[in-house]
Image 1 (tube, rainbow, N blue to C red):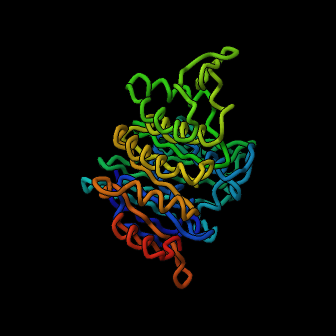
Image 2 (cartoon, helix red, strand yellow):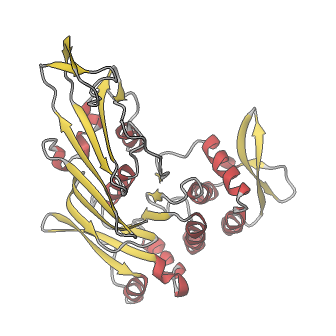
Image 3 (spheres, one colour):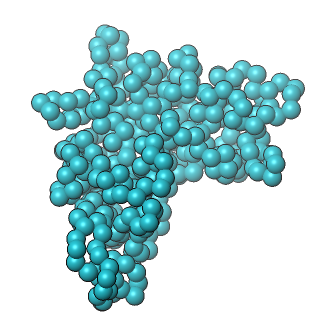
Length: 359
């Protein structure tokens, strides 16, 4: 887990530091304050085992494939779209070790490109000159992991898709999940997460919390419909229904809780966490997030625009839970995005005084 994060020249964040992170972190702020960008930076920082994360980020932003130009694929990752200035993201873990990523772009040139037996732009073998080929614009990821391992990957747009070089360093993936309001997770992916949680006997929190949204729900199960694995829910004495035929709140809750078990020891990133939930259920949702994050050893980062969601989170993390929670307000000060961090106790005092802490 991270205890601090430092981001430079990424998206709309020129230089942002958050020095006091918790196990569960709620990020608030006005529109265009960098809340989603903060989640994206954390997600990229977790991704050295994945070759083409820029395409995935573009999809999360709502672009439809195929994406063919660096302008759409990665120019927007840089502060003020200035690709001449590298973007840097560094997270310091609880034990004091750091993990960093530097993103840098090269502009297209008319010079012949260099290739090697290991592949285009691999950089790990003696290059040879290829006549007639021109160097495209590339994006380089340079990771330095907590154990000192350096991982370098380069990507480029080619024939409507993003391609990537190999890395000499073998990296074990540290699973993290990014949930947005634009796309549901595929039903098959949720079925896989359900199986893992069932095997670990971790469905009780999900079922108990889902009943806050759907009181008639008896239990979840895994079944096959038209040859596909699907999560089903039994309501009363009726036959089980596919999960996605229930209300958005139950689907959203299931997605949030089950995917936590898919990223044990990693991060769960949830944009606009309040979406799909009635305000009366939000405190129960936060309690379920808290329980699940402990069971899966997952650090949670979520954003919201909702004052009701903020107040519900502060209430849910009262008492013994308080130490796990941090509220981070992003706001613009003299043109720069800055973060103000509140403990649960300070956030509670502010909300009781009806102070505006969402930025």
